[in-house]
Image 1 (cartoon, rainbow, N blue to C red):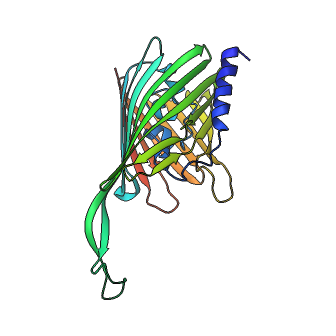
Image 2 (cartoon, rainbow, N blue to C red; image 1 turned 90 degrees about the vertical axis):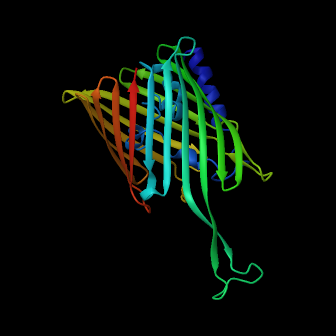
Image 3 (cartoon, helix red, strand yellow; image 1 turned 120 degrees about the vertical axis):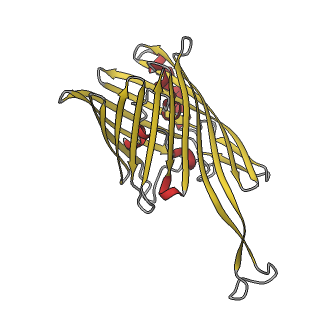
Length: 312
């Protein structure tokens, strides 16, 4: 194994096996909602395939494979408009760093009712019902400053510095975190990748003198690409571990996806645990890519996610 690959792998493993017990349970789950309709339509199994502006989120090592400058815009109103989910990123190839990106994610819930009792001095009852005192907004922002670099023709590494801002009504919090990524071309058509998120157990400090801590987690995956029926087919498998990535049976999340490209049209399908995803991609112009994702949910309404990428 080449020395640089051994060193990069050791760093990822050391980050992955850090103690996780000191972190808050679900403090960073808003960061797990994904970015870009293409990756989400593939069941969020995008860690090994990401080589566009959304790689700032999925795996910064993928930025080393950027072919051109890109502006990416994504919007969704999740679960029948309950949650606004937006992502915008600007990426470009570089020299010292082979890919650079600036990305911003926003998750927002508007018009949350804050209530109070008619008479706060009396217990809740038929004659003392809750009243809506005000409506507030909850918003979470994550700013990604990311770079990817090829240290060997087959090996790339990357990092994302994250700045987090959270607000609920009049309360707010700030945090800083670091993600590290790796991408390795095993052979023609096969890519291996990993992205270790929040390796420093990201602190999120509230103005109420309390601190949440986002647990480290790792997203690992493989992508296999081949020619089929006159087009290109890519199959992906990924898994997330750490953080709050286990269910009641302590099983790890498994994501899978498949994409078929032919003459400017892409068909996609994915599976994230038991939730299905579908999508299409269009390239109406060599400088424009349009993507649509349809995401199912076990208990809430389905979501349509739309992305546009401009190449220049």
